[in-house]
Length: 119
Length: 113
Image (cartoon, rainbow over all chains, first blue to last red; front, top):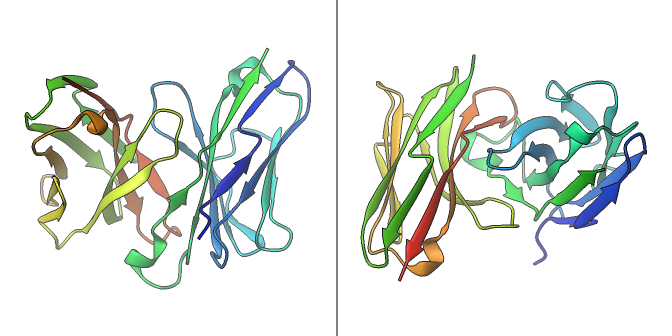
C-alpha cells in the first residue's frame, strides 16, 4: 500500500511569499503530525491532528504558520510572509490512532518531506 | 524541559564492525522510546519501540536497550553494512499527549568499505 506522500518535494520561494505544503497520509490513519527539520538536527514537532481537529498546535512557531485538515485526511501546512529562517525540511507523519488505542498504536509513519528554501 | 540528547554526533566505522550509539533523555511523563533510521533525503523509519518495562529489543542486526531508571538508551549495530550509513535518531514519546515525539539531534553514521 502507499505510504505517506508529500508535495512538492522541493519548494523555492522568495522572502515574504505565501506557501502551501501538502501531506497525504496513509489511508485510514486518523492522526497526522507535522514536523520541521533543520539541517543536522532532529525533527521538531509543529502540530498534531486527530481527525479534522488540531489536538495540539503548541509547536507552531508563530501565527504565520497554520495547518488544516478539513476532511480528516489530506492536510495542508500554510506559511505566510515566509522568512529565510523558515527554510527547512517539513515532514509529515500519520498513525492509525492518536490518544486512543494505547502506546503501540501511535507508531508514526513518515513521508519523505518537503524541502523549503526561502531566498 | 523535555530533551533528548545523543552521542556521538557522528561516527565513522569500517564495514563489518559493530558500533553503539547513546541516548539520554529527560522527558516526563515517559511513554516509550524509539530509534529511527533516516536516510539522506528521506523521512525517518522506525527501528524499535520500547516501553519503560522493556530492557532490550532487537530488529535484525539492531539491538536497542533501555534503562528507565537512569533514562538512558543505546542502539547497537552488529556487523555493519554500507547501507547502514544514515542518521540514527533517538525519540521519546510523551505520555498522554497523543504520541507527541521529542527527537534527539541524531547520530550521523558512516560505514566505509
